[in-house]
Image (cartoon, rainbow, N blue to C red; front, top):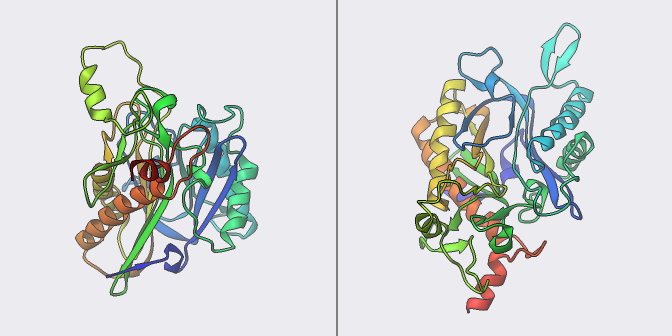
Length: 325
């Protein structure tokens, strides 16, 4: 097995667009010729688009784009830009009047970080598609990760910087990659050492605390509102030949990657969502894809915070590591 660039999965393009001042952005995964897709929503507070059509029993079995965005539910507007881009290329589900591009999406809540009136829209979604033509793979403070933060149980004041993470591997001819925007209520765990690498800061903001322990200390406070803008959204990309039902199962299995790298995860105030999409090229054992998907997703989550830079008064994992040396 070897590490590869996500762009090495043929037929897939990744693009980002963002508003740095507004602290928000979007990331698009394009499969212009259509790819079999699935989804699994585990969090209790999702903002999503076109997830119903991905149910195994429903008609459409090919997706042409998936968009991850900031802006909470407002950010779902960015999908309109993806549809415009694909329609211009005559890519989509064929109907009598032309094509209808099938674009799924999910949004994270970053309105508390920058300008809450600045949100991903149709123009930004279209720009992300144009940027996908450059074939550049970037991580950290970009796209849907621009305004992402983690460890928000005590508010954004004691949170740290989240971001966009990408990781992909190849085993023989099989390729599996993950792209994820990390904006969790919980802390981010190093999958190799099991140590917290980003999340809740202590009161002095000079070292890491524990979101899990903080929640335990407040377990009797039933009236506490811990909604501070959360949700981790991601996508598994592969070239494995799998059915729509198997792609939905793959999305479910991939949440194990969230569980390995985020603690706590899938809370009532996170909208944790994972899409899956494949170019349908290589016949393989589905469970092998699932194991690899868990691996690349957990690694991508780690990379999201490790590649983030301090910004918007949020300290990064890089900054905290320097201080603790």
